Length: 250
Image (cartoon, rainbow, N blue to C red; front, side):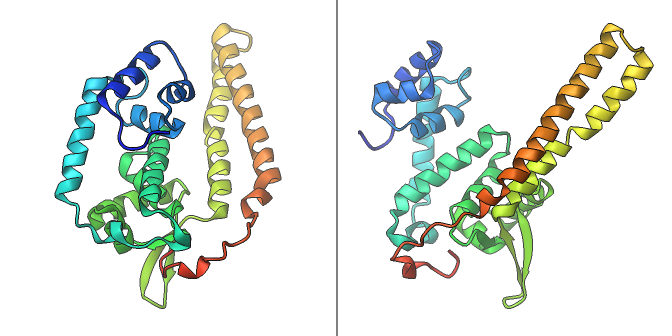
């Protein structure tokens, strides 16, 4: 399987594949590339309907140029625990960030979440996040405020070091799922009020009533599934034998 960055010719083949309606996995197979590479490439360059090979290639060259200008980054060169490949971890973190962005998260929020989820402790301070992502503390603060409002990150006080730590843990996925399900409650209630206003049996009232029933059914099913599957979030795997290389922040 070829490594390295995508070539302009490969980007042109991606554009052709998208135009033909091919799935990312099929495009990746034809290029002998990982599907994650194609997913990241398309998502970060306008998505499947707006992807242009020439613009994507130019953007890649500009990013490479910027990285070379800021190459001496301390955190980028720090050793990884468990014998991991530092470059592979950085690449995966970028893929994860891209997936978060595709799900609707703004870029900085997605980068912070991706950084936390690829840290063994699942917990970092604002200064550690700023250092790892090479951004300002103000950017981290804004991202954390948003993520916390969405129940995607929890804020904790580290009394020993007198600073706050931002944490992702097993239960946050459950809480976010419940919050997402309950987000439909207001629409369901409002839709049912509209049925009385518009008159039972009228086309408009029926449309609202059906929407309310559908969302109510889906929300309750989602909550039941989250409750039933919650224990999966607490499944533990064996720790690799070289875990002694884990750093303090990881």
